[in-house]
Each structure stands twice: as structure tokens, then as C-alpha cells.
Image (tube, rainbow, N blue to C red):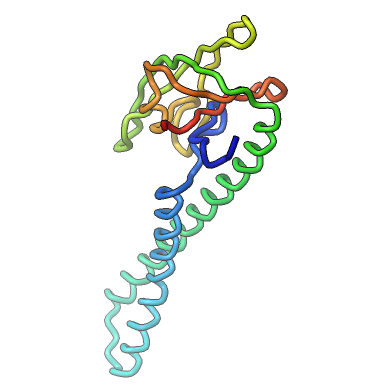
Length: 173
């Protein structure tokens, strides 16, 4: 099984790939543009000898925010890389099975989109397994992720690693 077929882990959350990963890179690049724009504006101010304290303060605040967001995006990228490494290990003994996913909770945190907690039920060699989502992302409750919304209350394909007791949700085909 290829890692590109995996969408999420019940314990670690969603894996960024494709368009989502592309958006992360675009966001990182955009955050780097703010300090460059500030340098250009400051050079223009030096050349014209016209200093505007409000513009300077605005650019300093914008640069600070852009650097903070850039750092956040770097942390997201690092987390995603670590998840990829774990998934590669989990795939060594993973078994593909059909499972039924049931919504066991729904939550909103501030202005964020709805987040869902799911429970996945499946059988392997006659033995039943029931696993709850426990992944946690910045500012969310354990197990509640927006990515689980699309998998709630339906049949899904999962990979289960017996050795690591890990459930990986596969992308819809």
C-alpha cells in the first residue's frame, strides 16, 4: 500500500498531501513576502526622506505576524513529515479492511469549522475491533477533527496495523 492512499490516522490526524500541502507551501511563501515588502517600503522612505511612524508601526506588526504564521506553518510541515515516517512503519503489517465509521461527537471551537469525533468498527479474522479517534490539533479537543466529518456515519476503507494498534483511514476512491 502506498502512503499517497492514506488520508488520516485516528491517533495522529490528517496527512497533508496534494492540494493541502500545496496550499501550505503557498502560505509559507506568502508569509515571507511581507518582510520583503517592508524592506522595499523602508528603502523608499529612506530615499524620499519621508518618515511616517504609522506606516512603520503597521509594517512592524505585519512582519511580526507573518513571521509567527511562518513559524506555525513550519511546525505543521514538521508534524506532517513525522506522521509520514510513522505511517511508513505502520504500513509494514497493515491489513486493509472495510469498516463502519460512526459519529460519536461534534464540536466547534470558536470560528473554526465543525469538528467530528468518530468511532471505527471492523473485523479481522472474526475478531471485532472498535477504535475511537484520539487525534489532537492545536486548540481542539482530543479526537475532534474537521477531516473526520467526511468519514462519519458510513462505510470506509481502513488499514489496521496489528503490531502498532493503529487505524489509518484511506482516501475515497
